[in-house]
Length: 112
Length: 441
Image (cartoon, rainbow over all chains, first blue to last red; front, side, top):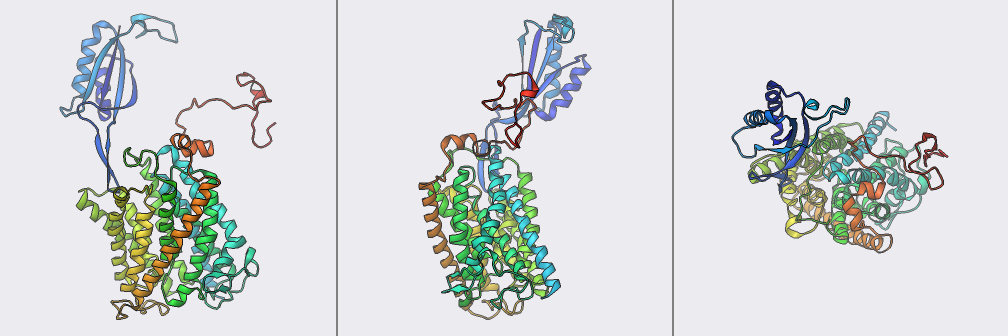
């Protein structure tokens, strides 16, 4: 089992969700996040004073998947979240030791 | 007594009161979220504190029988002899009840000190704020109001003009703001960290309320339902409109983008600038004054970074500079065609006489307010303490000064705090919860 984590542009969330649903993913968790990569932040101006805002709003998406689904899920996210401009985000995959569905107590692949 | 005049000034009084919660929102949106309630409180608490002080002694110091052109006597202490007959001085609001005139003026006494609070936002101890504001109303506002508004006040007799408070309200509050921030110092991180406004939508709502209430402030200052009130009403709207455009114009040249906060600030700057002139200039003069207010103030708000004083919400840049712009340009655009009690400025053929008087009024207000305000601020800082502790400032005024937060966006906030003599904090029995307010025990 793997946990696929993606940090994406917030306005791309709907497209990513639809792409994941299209390949049979039935659950995911999203949260608001802030961060920067190579794009750095952006400039805001208040009454003439310019501020460099380092952390820009992002959406963090987490999907628990079986090992054989990983490549397909990563591909779906990368394809649907891409705008070809700087700041599109990242996807990474980490091993998940155990997964339990709280309602039933099912474990492992059955809990996904 | 005139019922129409009375009705209009009653309505105007309510309009001016409404400006103070408008100011609270205007300021509240510009601070960081940890200080939103502390900032709202600086205006809203003034609605309580200043109203009471005004009735007890503030009004009589401003509008009581003249003592040497400098201050009012104590004849109206506690609003004694302030009744249904007009003010006995023979000039102020002769067609409305004295009670109404005194209450209309109360609302000016509420908002003027509240204007100052934008300068020291995000770093003031609440008890120090209460002491500073109380002293300032009685020692600075009341005397200057007497000089300018009372027919026996020395600036009134000199012939300096101030229709609704360019000197008394805006220059007075603006220079006081500078004096007090020189005493309390900069916020931690000023000039290094970005102090980004937490909710500009709130600021825009506040701007709208201020603009709306300002009709009472300026057109109400005609103290009657008449042509002068209508003229001042129009001038007020044009001042705000031109100010908004002026600020946006300056921004689009300097930063290439017009900002929402800029347009809101410009509207307020235009309103400030037109305040002294509202009842003395025609519509074209009002546009010129509002535009100059927007342009000059948008330039002036940058000075704090160059000169190194931390005027959190630009009270100096907007109220001091806007007030000076309006008070001096009145010497250019003033005309007796609008108001027989006014004077002709440069354009109407009055020469530089009016301008000279305006300069005297501006300088007198600047000097008096700066010196006395600095004395008050230093005294409060040395005794009660005016500057919040560094820890309180970092935590934010909401939690450190008022034990509450403006935004609670999380349902899992905690549990009841218990009194020492009540059940243990982790008791599971709901009946053991003790509410410390309202005699719950």
